[in-house]
Amino acid sequence: MQLVVARIGRAHGIKGQVTVEVRTDEPELRLAPGAVLTTEPASAGPLTVADARDHSGRLLLRFEGVDDRNGAEALRGTMLIAEIDPEQSPEDPEEFYDHQLIGLNVVLADGAEVGELAAVLHLPAQDLLSVKRPDGTEVLVPFVTEIVPTIDLKQKRVVLTPPPGLLDPSAAEVASAREEG
Image 1 (cartoon, rainbow, N blue to C red):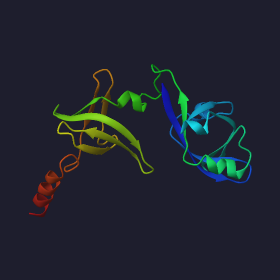
Image 2 (cartoon, rainbow, N blue to C red):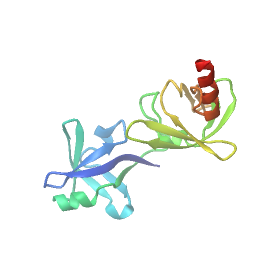
Image 3 (cartoon, rainbow, N blue to C red):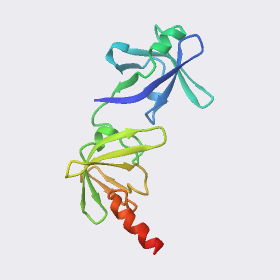
Image 4 (cartoon, rainbow, N blue to C red):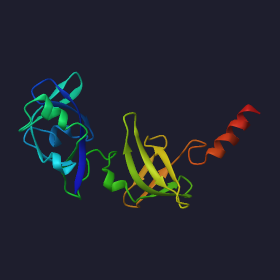
């Protein structure tokens, strides 16, 4: 199974280093020197990490064979992908790999069906769950404990406690009218 562990950002300096947007909770393992990563696009890799270091709170990587700024800049936007055991789970029970979540049933706390989890979107501000509704529409749900209190892999379901209007914008208008009235 393949897992996206980082996205290459801009070049840093003149010796082939790049900044990376880390997408794993185990960068010290997945992005350590010697790690061989496949890439998307595939034509950019595979890449072997030659050096990894922290610089002002940002992870910098240098790859074997990439020795100058031009080579580093050519990698910008490339996704770094690690091979993992499909049965493996993160150490923290509150963390999940995307492949574990996609396809789970999404329900409200009272058991009402919301839809199926179609994707996990990793955005700069926070992660979002893309839920495909039975009518074919999509709803984006912030992946935060207050809204997604329960993920039960054994029962294959995600439980939501959404604020008014998150799943149905017209419900927000009704709740807003009540507060004003």
